[in-house]
Image (cartoon, rainbow, N blue to C red; front, side):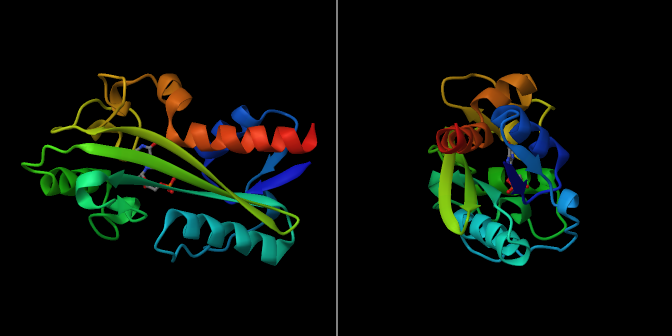
Length: 193
Ligand code: IMP
């Protein structure tokens, strides 16, 4: 059984291969010689994950999956959400994104937020969505130096440290991405075992 993961991000590939195990061979976009810049034009995470998976299925006829992730902040009506990567504008980095988020939450006591990863899977034309959520709070200042993206300003529920203060193995065992991938993995096991 082979499945294309519509990404070339080496960290994501490794994480997904570790969770899914050896029963399913996970191919990257590079493995199928796809160098296209796949559009991400939807205004929801589900929409973007589906666009990417459908692009690969329609063009190559291969079973595949794609993901999209966002940080959803309650007091901001779910923003930055699907726009998390470019919250401070195109070409801006994580520092700018975090600064904008902290600024927009100045004086706000409701710090509730969640990371959400959506995975869209297409097998023989049949589509399925998986949602991985980790709830938590936005800090008032950046804490910690590991990880990436919004990690320094997100403390997951039940913990005192931010994602950026945690060992990566600990973060990876509770993260939104892990939870969505585990659901995908369980589904594939049921299908193919
Ligand atoms: P992507 O869909 O995986 O590319 O994620 C979109 C954006 O969400 C990234 O550019 C980051 O800003 C943010 N993001 C996704 N996952 C994480 C995470 O685990 N920690 C912090 N930020 C994340």
